[in-house]
Length: 157
Image (tube, rainbow, N blue to C red):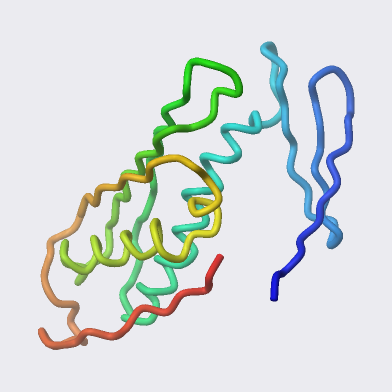
């Protein structure tokens, strides 16, 4: 069984648009070169890949009861030269400041988030690559033993 989602994109002026969902969530989109008021569609797509994976990764970290002091994803989209200039490769650099998160676990969580659970990445024809950077001291969190290996939970974003 499939799930249907809807949104409506409204033209505002020039190359400016607003997308509005049935529950009235809004996002500005802009193709103007001077004084843009929102991201362009390809920037939105790149951000959507990062946010989609991050939603699941944050859930996995929460299941481990790890405190997130900082987490960001730096994304680079490589586009084809010819029209329609689609992304052919997306590289996501996940940077964590999460005490108790070791590199092996972080890499596992990022791999699951980017390649298994993220609906946005799965909707692209692009190659998806990722890397993990830890900004904290690695090692077990104070309330976890070395053998603790909870299965990650995925929201299926």
